[in-house]
Image 1 (tube, rainbow, N blue to C red):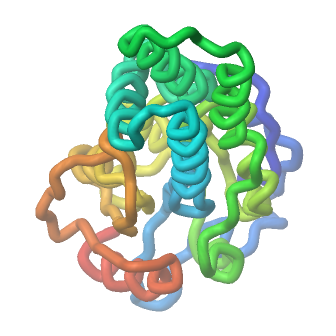
Image 2: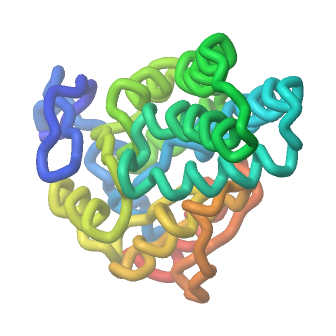
Length: 279
């Protein structure tokens, strides 16, 4: 059976799985669902898309929040460069404790503010602390705009490929991003994970009964989307963009890797990659 339409129900083996709401019988399946090969062309049996900063832009929300945080503390007499340095160090350190949950970012801002107050002998101001928390929380209340070409490209690809979404973060926030972006309808399965690497990709391939050599990962992060896929034998399409230290990694040189500048180039690039394998 092919599953269409899902809702989050539970966390299972570090992957938030989604409940099937409609099943297609064999007679109802179209060419896109069956992943039939047309003529002699080769095609991937599965595309695994990233969400944050691949389909929708969250990085700019973080940038705006950091700018507002720096401005607020500058008004209290703190140096811009010091504020950024202290905050970035705390935010990275807090990954070990809070992971990619929504609490990490605002907590890191509050800790940076309180730490700088203690370091300079200033008295903490509850009103400023409340403003800091509001700035940190704004990242998760503001809508993240979709990346260019998202809707037309997903419409086109969903007619040819079986596609799943694997997005990292807190389930409630990721569900909100998915709904705001309007992309849910294009994916056969949606996985929300607290971290993304080789184990998570292997789990998804197993769930979908697809060999790594017949799957392709699409995303902006070398550390989360691209390198783990290449290491387990998948293909990958990397869409480089601005990121933050937690997502940086060295590029792996491989003939299973393609690099594009925007989603608009993806259909053509998948055909090129498909000609190299997918037997």
